[in-house]
Length: 204
Image 1: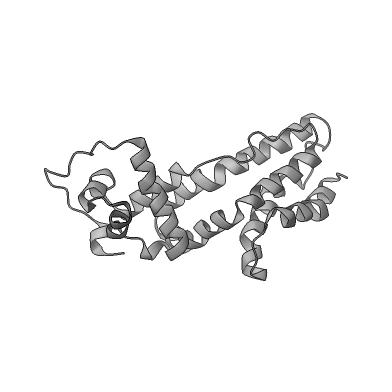
Image 2: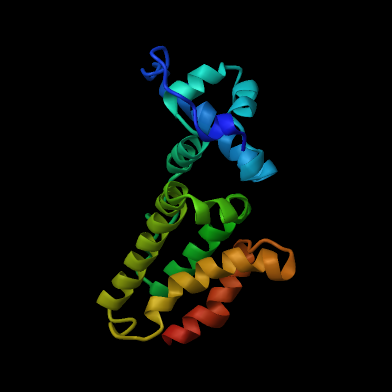
């Protein structure tokens, strides 16, 4: 990161945010996320994003004063919940479907986590944005799936394995590339759920 990326002095001409369309803003965010996945956080620069999106650096600096702010905004724009619509009436089947959904986006999510791994430990704003975009919505949706299973009587409310299910699923997403050099794809995660998660919960 260059010193210009870290801090950009305010001037009378850059104190106002320029008016850009939501579609154009999303182009900027998509370019940031693509560069993060392909090059890593340190290689992302305001200059590079400006060049790839054919805009001026001043436009980016008017909208986002620093690189960390820009990356954090891009992460928040990428927020989504893959598990929100999963509700089959069976906890075991819901967990299989959640595993498949998580595995379908494994490459992109793992790439972002790896690209931001060191940077998020140094920048609280980035860390917060990463949790808001990729972690908290998914964990909340997964806990809702588990809670519905408890409400249906499929698992006792105090079952000790319940609190570890999110860590098991998301931990496997992160660690398989490290341990085996392969993504935790949909088929792999479904097998993992069937071999480890369901037995731990006492489900068939």
